[in-house]
Length: 277
Image (cartoon, rainbow, N blue to C red):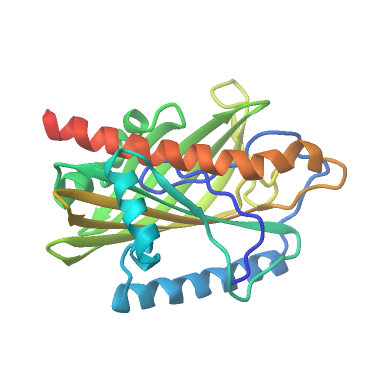
């Protein structure tokens, strides 16, 4: 997939992305052609991920050349977060929107896969683990390894944007040392006057276009006396309005790295905290 400029704000186990800074004028519109292009991109991503689950590499760093792989493992075990912007394939530009895709990896020493899953599946406490970006969180239903969850996200830089989101999440235990999950946002609504007397949700797709679609994949692998935690997110936002590129363009390169790094760091902190309690 030859993928365009990418962005992912990965907050909580759902890795929720959000572009929330800068004006949103003129008002964008979510068109059928935009949705179709994004859906095709997700299908390609699903096929790639299904293949890597079957044939490997399970973690993307294991597909690196030997020298790069050794260096990446050393950085991870030293406490750093590895990030990469995804590219390649057949999808390029799409009408009326931008596809954003990032992937990150962190190592949590001295824990098990069950320790990590305990935090990732604990949606009722996501507002604690991932504050201040996750403002509200709750499990709406659970049937075995399938969850329906609600998360409210808040992001502030120049302006404040709040999103109410609902997700379906499925967890899979691949082996005693491997697990993965798949999450899809089933509803994303921008909130006006959040917490105020006139609070209301805008109609999904008829908003400022900060987040229209979101798909998330997590992978866990236990080795080296700890667990490697990998997160991949593909999202859809509005395109860059003419005349405002000077304002919005920087966020497409700065926000993804900062927020994905935050999410993985917050996950490690939460897992280690729960492990010691």
